[in-house]
Image (cartoon, rainbow, N blue to C red):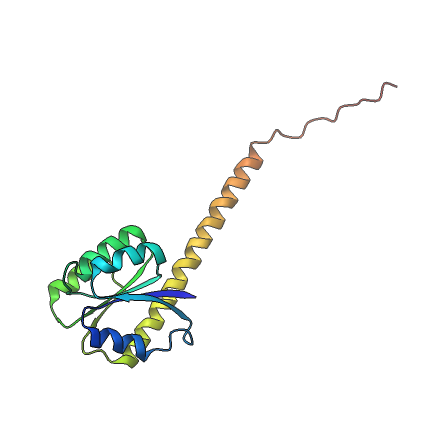
Length: 161
């Protein structure tokens, strides 16, 4: 199950997102929410969500700083930025942080669910790619170990006759 964490300082929006989706039914594990990045970071460290949904402008630690720190903790975390600001600089910074999507407020919940579904597909692809890389790495180690074995030589004849 894909773990999702939500960070939004506006309680009405946070509650609306949280309550508008049947997380478990959709195959998500909603691991929590916070009102700012400073409160969110320790929970992100503990829960290790696959998807982080964060507002861009919040008190104490904004969504961009949170995204940067979350990305350092987990380079494969899928980040969705939500914002009331249709500002190129914010979008550009989100792109540099490799945010998966930039969603403008007011949030259309149907569109948001579609973005979330795509984020899950992306997340699953990242997990698949990671497993594939690990499998290939283990195969290369196994074949390297096998090549280090001595070549089969002539059999020893232990029969004294």
